Length: 389
Image (cartoon, rainbow, N blue to C red):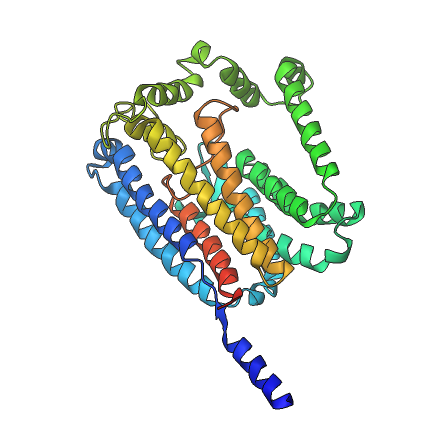
């Protein structure tokens, strides 16, 4: 009888299969390929004018994607539990990196902001993108460490305080990335905690503050709470047509592109706004070119692809073998979701303009490489899931 029981247990163990989320992998590949198409479509004119090579941006993005896929594959093949041991080191290195970027010549200034880490005049990578990976990893490890006390105010405040130096250093030169980092911390704590009411209250307070800032922006300038350029962004957001020759130019041209696309668009490659009207069309404003060339139908399809990706993250997080794996995937999900929402909100002038790229689609080698590292981490967690045959 005992031998029979042992044999049944062995059969049961053999029937447990390793899971791998090929659906997530498929949507990653599709979005990256679509991103290459849109980078070429939105940048070919500007690249030809500025560099004499219409493929200039496409080539650079393709090289970054190849590197990104290699990184994703390598990261996905490593047991994600080993990353927990790197959480402290990653946090310290990210902190040192931001100090070097903000306060030493290794920080390279671009458009008035020191956001790039480099040597001399050679930019190596955008520092905030590396910090996002380090923050997700460290938050997952911290939540796992304080799992039994995560519902307590003190524990949640402690975790936010630990991550605050990174967030503040990034925010100093890159407000949009600072907002995303804070949002990642908020979402991860929200998912980990069983007491949700305090988080809804925090959202309400932030919304009320945002409304007050919008209404009393002039007074805040007088009190030196807001900077002049921040006031300008608020005024442009309220009435972009009144600042058509200044800060409102990019917003208006993006809205023209969206409006002229109609239901099915003008056709791939047929955008008029990318011909020098929308500045840097391949970067933050690429969604407006998608709307113009592929119409509302194409824009909705892109949004649905991102929703499908987020759903796959939810599936992996819910079935992860442990809390650390689950939180790791939640952090990646929060990053993608926040960045997509904020980018589309900026392009449609739902919120004031700030520099946020559309994941996998906007031009940017650093962003793509570190996003693919995050995808590798999520796929690594999916590989650890077991299911009954």
